[in-house]
Amino acid sequence: MLVEPLAPPRSVTPAVPAATGYWARLLPALALLACATRLPSFVRPLWNPDEGYLAVQARLLADGGELYETVVDRKPPLVPWLYRAAFALWGDESLTSVRVLAVGAQLLTAALLASLARRRWGDGAGRTAGVLYLLASVGLNPEDAQAATFEVFMLPSTAAAVWCADRRRPALAGAAVACAFLAKQTGAAVLVPVLWLLWRSGAPGPGRRREVLRLAAGAGAPVLAAALVTTPAGFVFWTVTGSGAYASFTGSELHVLLRGTANTLLLAVACAGLLPPVVRALRVARTGAADLWLWLSSSAAAVALGFHFFGHYFLQLTPPLALLGTAALQVLPGERTARAVLASACACSLFVAWGLLTPRPELDHAERLAREVRARTEPGDRVLLWGMHPETYWLADRTPASRYLTAGLLTNYSGGRDGPRVGERYAVAGAWDVFRAELARRPPALVVDDSRGKPYGPERVPGFQRVLRGGYEPVGEVGGAVVYARSWNPGGP
Image (cartoon, rainbow, N blue to C red):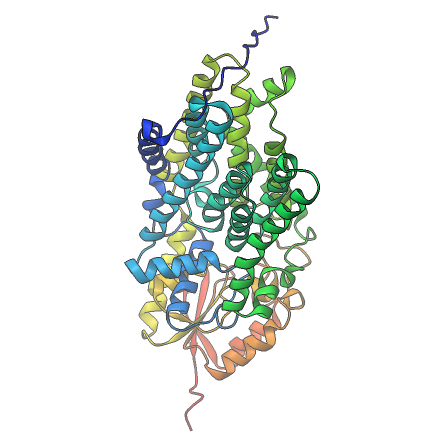
């Protein structure tokens, strides 16, 4: 069996000033590639319920809502604020503005990775890292890869944290870690490679301790500011302590494991150009990339945290994978780079075509339901949608009757987890008391049971069943969702 000879490591060209035109040539190319890979994101009004949730949150914040009080979610505040700002500047009738911001976030991530690779291995490696990242970044189910949600806006901060640590700027690295955490909690996993880089390159003794303190100060200040701008107790509860039942492996174990396996395989296909060089380099040479392996390992742990394995979680793996692939290509024959890019481009084209051509039946259902809700209510009416698709509120342009935008917060049903840990007893602590008070204070004009046979239907959730029996009667049905209108006037005689 013939073995491909290993080429000597290619010489590293020292980084040259940007004035030479390196970035002037690279950035437009990366921008064009970022737009091409995310073209499918613009062809549909929404891609997944997370986008719908964020859109509804942004509207409620614009109407005077308070995050973690009248508007709640198990996420930090940065992305809801970003949606709110985009809607304020460009309107809230479509998600085009946040889709453009998502393209910018991917471009920024690619540029930071290119800068990291260029500093370590030269100009060619910088170009390779940026291109490989963008090609791999859409390698999942389009509803995960093309949506403008938490992970997409988290990735630039994770790349920036490593970039700053690589240049021994601990305070800025800490601020970037904080921004990653404030986009999504698992963004804090990048702290592992950041600490490694600072500790490895820092002066021993007091010098290292000072850098760690600057890192802590840089990370702590933005998080503390976010807590104070919202409410400290609400911030801690909704981002850290209030998700115990959600972050559990119990319930639908086989379903969850199959989902994790499927998404791992999808990402492996997307990384068809990256993984073979990494495997070969591991067999024949050391790449000197301990920090990148730590970055990948900590990101993998973050993906597994909570035991849900949703596809969009896997986006966190793509930056370290792109850099590891670039590192591996430096010790392999030069033609392997072209082959890696070609393989990644072919895989990327398949995922882009998938996003452009595949129908989205759940979106079609949400749009039909939204039309029914609009037809049966007035613009000022409040509506209760009992389901897992908060985008219907946004599509119907109606105000939610409760701060809990999905039945998941009141039953612990989440993304197909339908085992024994679904029901009122597994709801967010105190949620049912608040929910009942909200409906008693301002009863919704319309209630929609969109459970469609799922384990959070009224027959299994007595609290919701009591809501329906408290003055509502069925008046229609849309694709299995039952629409209920008020059968009496609480303010009447």
